[in-house]
Length: 173
Image 1: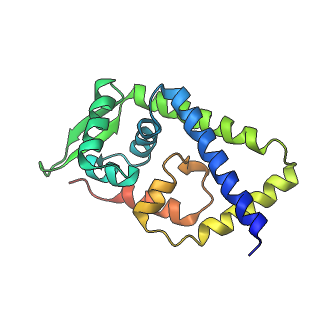
Image 2: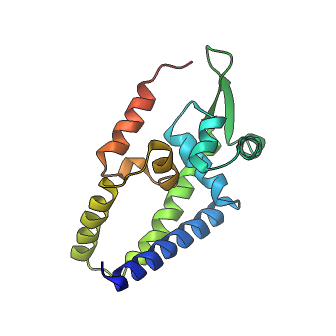
Image 3: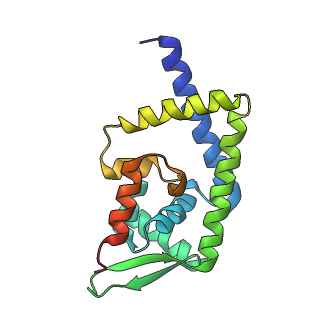
């Protein structure tokens, strides 16, 4: 393995992460977990607090406090399912607007990092990143944590599209 490649890959990953965190914090005026929660709730209507916490690597109490903040700002509502044991989260209209702002901020931040690359180099990088992502040994929860800011509609990975389709087709509880 090329040590320089490993070193630069690590630095690039941190640079991208830092840019996304800063951009989403700016778009929401809140923590990265706050922004990521909105993106995940948008991706998975009817997600529960417990599942949201798993996707964000938060404790149950941390996820509950985060949801309280989202509800308190009228960005999310709680909905009871047919099975009264479950409470599902859904975005409000204001929450949907905020998700659009988060996604735009993320796209602009990462786009700035790509400006030194030519169009051909960007296409080559997309191909390489897709190859790396397709060989990820992560389980569903770890993948969701990794992709917590992703715009699922732009993802080239079939596994991501399939997971969202399965979620959307699942019966409500």
